[in-house]
Length: 367
Image 1 (cartoon, one colour):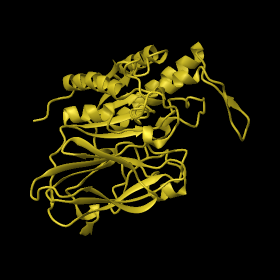
Image 2 (cartoon, one colour; image 1 turned 90 degrees about the vertical axis):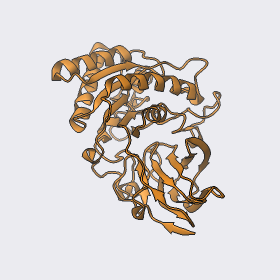
Image 3 (cartoon, helix red, strand yellow; image 1 turned 30 degrees about the horizontal axis):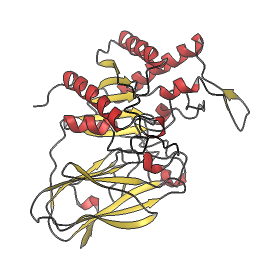
């Protein structure tokens, strides 16, 4: 079998935010991966991975069906995606990273070093109908979208890019999609009030929250080229952790001893609302042609739903931008809750149905 780098296979599409380098292709965020149309009988995926705490998992789709899911071992490896299939028949192959970029594990990384095959070739993929970017927290990282409802351990297997509202929405619209997300993070702090965990602080980098010298060497801190992949819609799903932080003890800075806590006071809620307005302005400045949708509520709207509605209304009034919306999403219930007290696949499916219908109404039809 011949191994080829992705740099020599321009027909293979790189999915997710990346540096532009394809030899190898580093996969950072949830749902990063590759997609191709292949005519051969057997195809192998060549990988390089590492981790100290959280191993990367990937999913394999063949002709639209989810056929495999497995953890990637540390070091270089090669895995057979399929063999013995009809030569000459076109196969649509998609490989997705299930696990988010792991801020708390600087040793976590995953790379596609190439594809190996003995026969067949690659055909050009059709252009996507649109491009969607999803910005969020654990829900958008797919945490709890796989696994039994009783699970409480915070481990890699309970993340899924397939049982995911972004994947379902994108596939329904024929879209390509990218994700920027981190479990537990928010607008002003993480769920435990750590103000260092503000997702939008890292929005302008390829994957700025991927910590450590190794991730920096892989390009995680490089400026992200928004113009190279102009999004048609940016879907924000942030705020759940800010709401939760208001019920949790203050975070104490281990160096200075100072404390920080989100609290439901009028002054703090005003700061949080202003931060949401500023977030919309930031996203608009980087995505001048995109529809902006703050889609929220898969774990309930709580205090944040009304606040975010006001923020979107204020942003529209202050800027005159009529292409920004607040969209409530169905909340997980006793029937649709997944692992780790997070939305399960059924909740993601319901959310995708609502979001898909909304985007169909709002996005211009492509010729």
